Length: 427
Ligand SMILES: *Cc1c(COP(=O)(O)O)cnc(C)c1O
Ligand SMILES: [Zn+2]
Image (tube, rainbow, N blue to C red; front, side, top):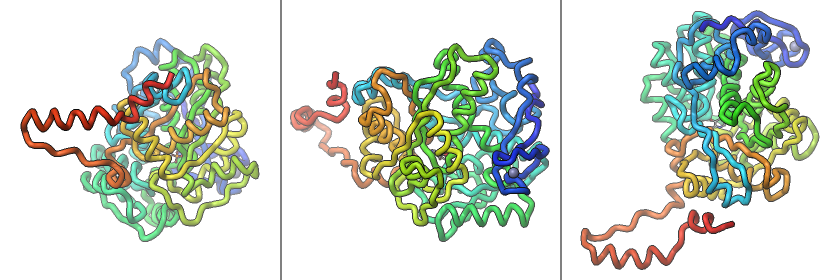
């Protein structure tokens, strides 16, 4: 199903249009560029039955993604579960809660596989043989893996000091991994220079307009799995601030195409860590102007972007939809990671802890009503961010291999109830 429905690029500030090429900013005002579509052409082939008849991957919405031919990269990406989370709902005191679980996305266990599938398929269409990215970790993993599978050469640049799981999870694929003595914003600036100097395709630099569209597939899947409806609330983690906007764009595109049962009234809520909170600080201050965080310090390293590329648009969207943004301390992030694991059996990375802890805060503040429907976006896998947990988890008890020791142990264990059984007892 080739889909030549993406027309070109358009500046989000002045509206100037450009052809579909590797360019991420307007030459007039440096505004970010966005992909535009011929929605009449999309409507001709994309209806509910057609979507439902296709394989459960992000490509079932191909006409709304900016890849013209068959995707060369990431054909199996997406189609992750939307889990009804009743035990967690009880613990939070809400009635209708869902988890969109991209911690199990294929192939590298984060939502970044969606953006990379689009960006690298587009890179192949545009004729790039060398690709790269500036990454806080998950993007590095996904670019490295998907580039390997597509036979592309990959340069992956990360800030020094990332979690071991993320570093190994880039090196294993044979990508050229380069750690920069600096933070993400230093890495990003260098990548812009490299992309320009060498003419390579950097997924989140010169290919960014295409890359960003991949995030919409998370929104499409949420709406389809809710029975062609959108929830009252979405809580999404924010790094560069792109994902949150694209989930909402996805809802609006479905609405425009007449695919939804009800109008989109979803309130979009953004989650950040207190140690790197440029977007949530903007929303809370009401200033509309994003002040970069110079020295991010948080265990949620995947979200540690001090100068977010889409921060302005994210904060604007949050306010316009009647949502809100909060940030949480590292301790609350770890507590939330444990709560999610113990109630729903889902081990999310630190960014998932950020999302859940912020959702808790918004419920307590009354900004999320207890009887309204809520979707939490879990974007990455706990296996990749073990370091902060290793310090706080107890080690397993060691006993001799006999029944007496086990029985003796059982008495001490049953007298200390776990967090999950406490949560389960909340009516
Ligand atoms: C990159 C990332 C995000 C945020 O994405 P943006 O679109 O940059 O806001 C959220 N969660 C995880 C785990 C990520 O790796
Ligand atoms: Zn412009």
